[in-house]
Length: 275
Image (cartoon, rainbow, N blue to C red; front, side, top):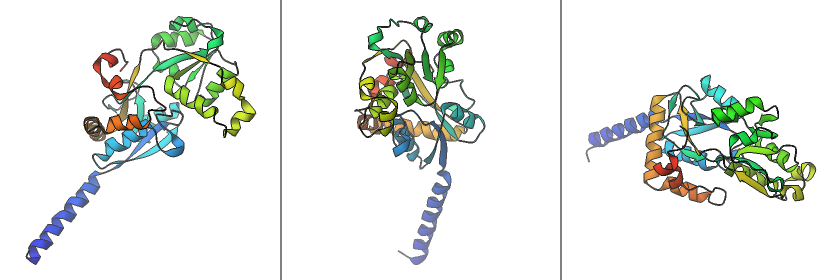
């Protein structure tokens, strides 16, 4: 190959690589720090972090996670301090919404020995309740109305503390996503958890619980400040769903998650989910 042609090819290649590098971005994402197995802060892993990384990698982007209490994650997005926030329903923030990413199953969780009959939201009215942050706005108008009338209702950002309060019988009901509750419960039962020794004992933690799944499954989107970045994420999400990587991510967490991707995405299972 003549030298001038080789030089031209190298220049074109360098321009291509440089332009691709310019198009690739690091996306700052606000993430609640208490949602394992969906996000596991300590190891920078979890279903949703893996989905974020792999979807953005399709377009060459990387992510920078900022772990914040749920309320602050929304505030940071609204203030423009981050490029994205996960787990939103349409209308919760002003931004560009992704396609549906995951589905949560929120439940009212009580100690089985109490034999509570909780078949609808109104059955919670006389209960001592602790819920995750913003549950009163996320879980619908009927639940919100109940919280306004119930003086014993409170919200905590630390979901591990919620579980301890339930097993110590300081509250009657915990409102939590089923898999998040199970993850934290399992962590508290670990023998290396020194905090457990001083706060709550193993016998208390081994009490059986009952899941009252009175809320419809909730399908969540991600929100972005940039329409282009949103489109890049949607493209990557569709790509990993089609090439099987999305399913593989769920399979990697099969020991800590109950739901499978098909149940999250199929129309017959999401038609009741709240946008």
